[in-house]
Length: 115
Image (cartoon, rainbow, N blue to C red; front, side):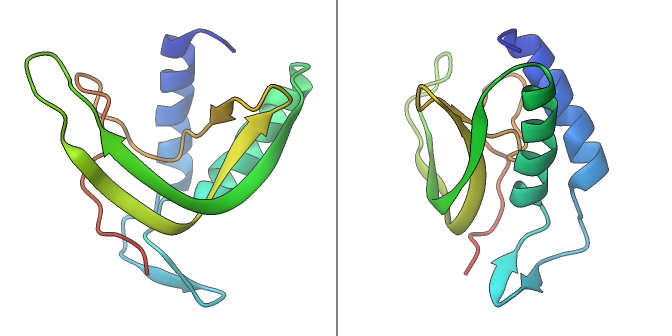
């Protein structure tokens, strides 16, 4: 799955399946804003492994930073999440489809920080 358009399309489908817009909830003492990063990583990991990719789940703190987009200058820190999950392959490349991306600017939609 190296085609970015295919990954973005898969991300949209995962969002429809996994995103919960009912508001922040508590997941074992950790705030969850409804984007189900662990579930995204788990389901995508299964799909990638079935396709022959070697991936593993990782957890930790994540910071999303907006760089320049077209004529717009860099935006700085958009979101900081204290507990987040994503996939990493054997070459240390990160895959995370849990964050909704705007198609034109490729920056996360505004979501209040967890924690």
